[in-house]
Length: 88
Image 1 (tube, rainbow, N blue to C red):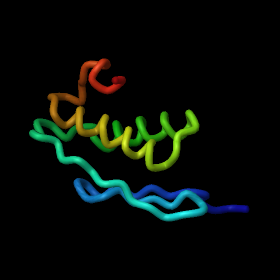
Image 2 (cartoon, helix red, strand yellow; image 1 turned 60 degrees about the vertical axis):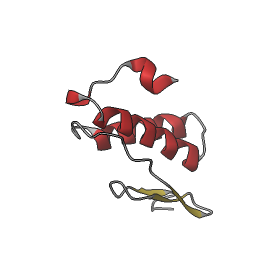
Image 3 (tube, rainbow, N blue to C red; image 1 turned 135 degrees about the vertical axis):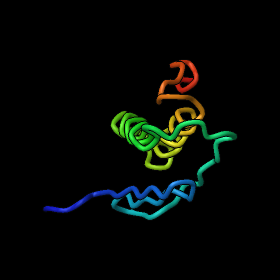
């Protein structure tokens, strides 16, 4: 069958909504203490979400990981963050 089996909708600093094929849900976003540069925040979220999801984590857990990485990215210049700050 055609069509999306799951959907994730980001909305800036608002909650991230998802549908995983069975249930709908949302994950709250913790604001970054200071936004220095938003370059690549969305790409960073997407990469971290997909890494978690493809590793078998739930939508909620993968979204939380995406939010964590995006938050780290916006707190630095040029979308560069220390690897240890997002792996821990």
